[in-house]
Length: 182
Image 1 (cartoon, rainbow, N blue to C red):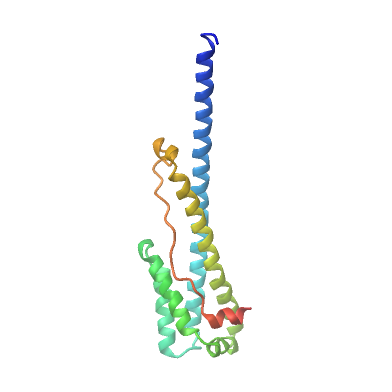
Image 2 (cartoon, rainbow, N blue to C red):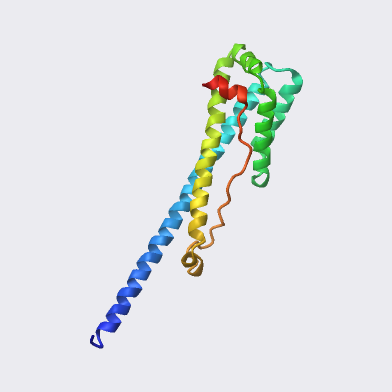
């Protein structure tokens, strides 16, 4: 090898390292964008579920105690700050299971005027929440895995982006509502 080829090889190696770092930073940026989009979709589904639950609570179908429990849980879920959102949404899931725990209660909803539409909306909402949460948490898991790589940490490729957090909540739908939706 000549004396001139060493600088050329070093330059080629630096360019390849730069391309790899740029590609990794772009991938991480796309994962963060995917998390943001998935979180927006999750927020929309949670809001939809809370809105339908609140509409159901104020419909007059249930006794006052059940209506109040469902209405308070739905209102708390809609108004919750980010740090309390998971708990509020879990409490709404528990309230839905308590109020719609038996098939007779679901039938009462369906038989009420406009109840068939409310029941259909609620079935769709309680099915979409777990899917949206799964998409969000999958994106978080992928971003976390990439951010754990030494290269990402050493070169600070994540910049100042906050470490992504999964959204953990109780999203188990009422059994009677799930059975009625099939």
